[in-house]
Length: 306
Image (cartoon, rainbow, N blue to C red; front, top):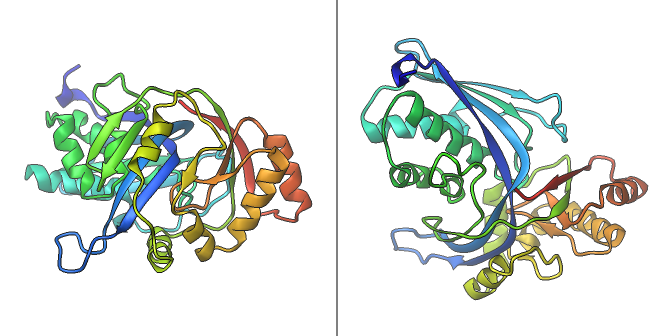
């Protein structure tokens, strides 16, 4: 079937965790990226995924969005953001601007990845929408060209644009700079247990708290050593944003402490929060402990690296 005959395409948009995340202090005022942060992080996709479908819209309809929460979503969350702020919509619109073409498309996303949890659901949705639009409309853009567009959306989005159609989910990678440098690594195999509170952690607020805490120097060697270790050592993982996330949401420290005590292994915040994970399958222990500690708003579920 030719591209012109295709009416719709679908793909899974996997979530991610950051087993290691280090950040530099903000770029100085007066520079081209004033206030931005250089990063060095190891990102790994996990089993949890949204489903993104992109179909042709009517002439002149532009890019429209339909969001629903999947019946099997492991976390209850509200879908309360406008289409104009959705990264998938912004991505396809950016693609239209990049190519100079008018793209009329409908995006349907069945959400399983909770928002504002540090799991990269919005970024993964955006990357999937870019890939689907490129294929559905026969744009013929390379992965490098798509990553150029993706960088305008956020530092996580290019990670999900791995090379080749068989790279689904994206291979893990060491991501550095402002998200533009991506060095793929071998997949690690591990079960993980995730706890997601009812509250989210708005990324801008977490970064502002990070700056207020007086960040130290970035540690790329530490990230690289963990990414190349061949596994997931729960005792060695780290996240420079964890103290900032706990300043924004002090309740997060309690969730992490209960998780670590119940599971007998360190608990880590992924991205800018609010999701907390431990390495291993400890869902029953974590769920019981969080319930006993009256943290009823925290959803606990199993996943794995993929």
